[in-house]
Amino acid sequence: MTAALFNVVTPVLLCIAVGWVWARQRRPFDTRGMADLITLVGTPCLIFSTLTGVPLPADELWQMALATLFSIAAFGLIGLAVLAPMRLPFRTYLPPLMFANIGNMGLPLCLFAFGDEGLALAIVVLAVFSAVNFTLGIWLYAGSGSASHLWRQPMILATAVAVAFLLADLQPPVWLESTTALLGAFTIPLMLVMLGVSLARLRVTRLPRALWLSLVRIGGGVLVGVLIAEALQMEGVARGVLILQSAMPVAVFNYLFAVRYNRDPETTAGLVVVSTVLSVLTLPPLLFWLMG
Image (tube, rainbow, N blue to C red; front, top):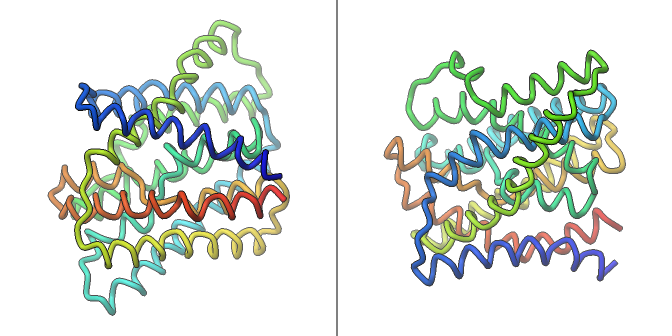
């Protein structure tokens, strides 16, 4: 079990380290361009090739999507309950608590821990998170928003097309399978390298507050994941993926939104860094339990 755990965690940490060292050596790295490449090309192709290449029962996909919605809603309530007594602005602090790093860290961990089935279910979580983040998340940061642009997001479109193939019990043409698999292959390593670059460039402010909210994000995530899995009677890989994804640290996307909408980006940067470093300590025992 120890060897299996080492094989899951080490590739993720080494890829992050590559990005961190790259940035610390002040080598050029276009974070915005890489983020666009991942969001607009790599992730949609990864979603399509994985969902169509590892077909899962429709009820399992819908159950994971429902569990993800419950998880986001639960963290919304937890965030409100934690932030209100501290008198912290919801629009700054609530999104980082609600939207975890289920892409950059969650996808590779689910792949290495639970195989292709784990990756497919983790991608369902990613699709639901993205839909909510690009609607409710933007509304929280900007104070306004609309769902009309949602269907212009490539990740949502790729999910819809993949689900259509699955529901029609059709196999995509070989050229489409090969192309999306090839383009999707760069997504996970590039996500991890970009995370490392971001961690090297971001700075921590208000450390005690960042540490407390990071504990809420990760510890509360484990609790929420376990409770939802029990409520929906999820077992095996599905249960492991839900709990693991729920326990991820704060997503880097929150920092990008905070910069775009001027919602105290320095504070969000601190939450991203502290929660990610904290997850290095919490993920090994969590994975040891889930994989046991």
